[in-house]
Image (cartoon, rainbow, N blue to C red; front, side, top):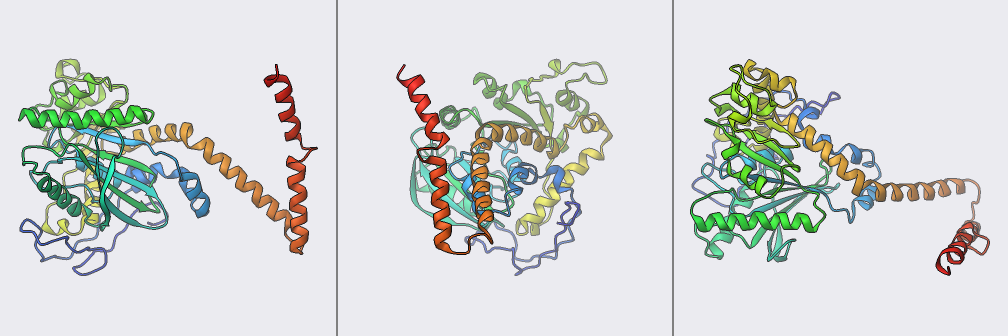
Length: 437
C-alpha cells in the first residue's frame, strides 16, 4: 500500500508464491493453463475495506504486541450474520467484507451448513478449519483435529469439507447438514477481531429442507440471545428481475423474528436489475420518477437502512486461481459500476451504493459494540501498563543496584497497600459505614 492507502499488486504467474496448491484433483477445477494477469486497477481501500475501517482502534496498539494480545484475550467479538434465500449472493457479500477467498463459491453451489469465519488480529498469519457437532446454541463439541488451509484459495478446502460431511452423514443433495458447523479461524495482523456467519439459504421446497434451514437459523438466533444479543444481521435480497422485498423469504424471516431493528438490508446482483428507478426508490425511500411510492413497490422498512451492491466476478479461468486479484477487481468494479450509471446517481449521492455504504454502517455498529464491551477493560489494562512503565522509567539511572530496586519496589507496595495506605482506610470506612450498618 502506498501512502494514500491505495493498493498496487504485482501480477502473479503460475508457480509464484501466493498460488496455493489445490486440495485434490477435481474435474470441475480451473484449467492449469494460467495466463499472466494484467495489473490490478488502483482501488481506494480505505473507503471500501471492512478490515481497514474496523481496525482503527487496534492499529494504535499494533506496536505493543503483548499488550494488544492481552486486551483482546477473553473478549467476545461481535458477529455479522447473513440471511438470504438460496443463491442470493450471501457468500459473495461476506467474501468482499473479509477480502479473503474462503467462502464456498461455484456455479449452482449452495451453502449446506453454517460456516463461521473468525477473524482474529494476530501477528501470526495462519488459517485453520475445524468441524463442530452442535446440539444447541454455542460451538458444541469439536470433531477431529483442525486442519491448516491456505488463505489464497481456502474456499476449496471449505467446499470439500462440506461435501465430506454430507457424505459421511448420508445427507442427500436436497438436504442440509443441520447438526454440524464449520469454523474457519483466520489470524492476520491486518484484520479486526470479528465473526462472519454464512448460513444455508432459505427455501420453501422441498419441505424437509426448508424446515432444516429454519432450524439452523433459529439456533443462530438462540445463540445470539444467549451471548447478549450483539449480532449484526444482513438481509441479502437479489435485485435481479422485478425485485419486491416484501415477497422475499429472507425479509419474511426477519419480520417474523422481530429483527427489523437489528438488520441492514443489502440488494445484491444490481447489474441484473430490470428497473433501476424502482430499485433506487426502494433503497433511498423516495418516490420513482412516475410517482410510485416505495411501499407500492414492496419496500420493507429497516431501522438500519438499505444499500445496493453489484459484485459481478470478472471473467477468466485464471481468476479461479488468482483469487486475491479477483476480489480486488470485484471491489473496484462494484464502486465504478454505480458511479458510472446515472440511473443510480441519487443512491450514490446518499451514500447507499456499493460496498462502501455497507462498510460504513458496520463500522458504526462495531464502534458502538467496542465502546460498551471492549473499551473499559482495554483502557484499564493500558493504564496499568502505563503505570508499570512509568515506574520502570523512574528507576532508570536512579538506582543501579538490583537490591536497591527491590527495596524501593517493596516500599512502593507498602505505600500503596500497607497499614498507612489510603486503600486500607477506604476499605475500613466501607466496612464501618456500609457493611456493619
